[in-house]
Length: 206
Image 1 (cartoon, rainbow, N blue to C red):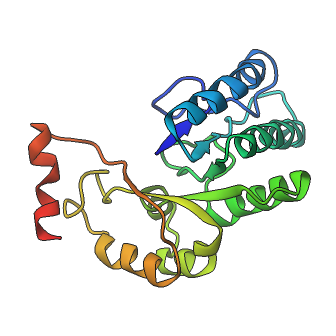
Image 2 (cartoon, rainbow, N blue to C red):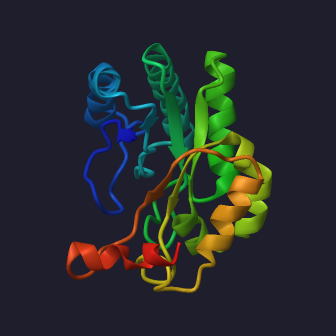
């Protein structure tokens, strides 16, 4: 089970708050302990912290410094309740102002947080749909970063539908993840169409 820290306006491209100076960052900080304690109460072991969009008139380095400070606070709170902190890469076509739109950039942030806290509980949230939208080599991403991955999400591409509605070889990719040593959850992040039961028919082939 996973849980988001405060992330501003969801869903859509204007999401994430922790790197946005002012009220959004303040709301993120105010939510940290609330989210952590709720996670403890329901046995949640992963907390996702979504980066904020770039803001006009604000130096990106200022935003990144604020983000690291807030992510370190979030990682410490997650650690206190026995959870990991997740850092997710989105995709540039749908979130053009997000500064984390590649697996290497997300891993860079993960490493920075772990260095700042010394806890080692910051992990990569590997969303195969987002990474495919960025044009990344998914096999290479899996091979390089499976050991730093704390959660995986899937949807087919194009369309962000259920497995089998697009062209991604999701069976093969998930199998590759397992062979690379990933043994965590795989979340379904696809857009449903029609009655709920119809959106899980693809499972009958597994």
